Image (cartoon, rainbow, N blue to C red):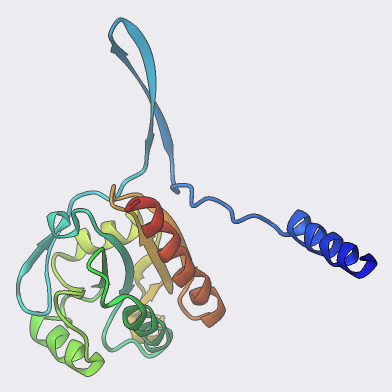
Length: 211
């Protein structure tokens, strides 16, 4: 009996001390918008959202946010001849892809930050090398200014830099976006342990979005 009580006590201590998972609160600026409904004044909380975009994927198809309707997705920014972090990040993106490629609620997208060299044909060759399905993972190219603005709206730094390896600087972030186009969290795509955490967060978010 004493041993049983000790075991129960240890279990209770474990759950009391275990840190609860923090909610994936949308990131970015928050606005509070006042509206009137049925004579009552209500305040809506409006979170930052990723603006609409239009780019070409590796098959030359125009991809817009309509293609992400009712989808959770992850996004990153790269260039195909990147000599530094991109291969590492892509290896981690492949881990995510292989984990969720069978889930129709989930998509992946990688935007080039060097559209001059990363044409549709170049991205197609890169996709073939990765052995990915076009309808599950979009590799996008298009207008440079719009691509950079999309990176910034995902809170990822990206810029041309003649002194940087490959001529560009950018973050190795992998960003998680919900069905309402809100950035919910991100990870360091060069850190496998942080990617492990993101893989779990993707499942958490889909459980929240698709109850």
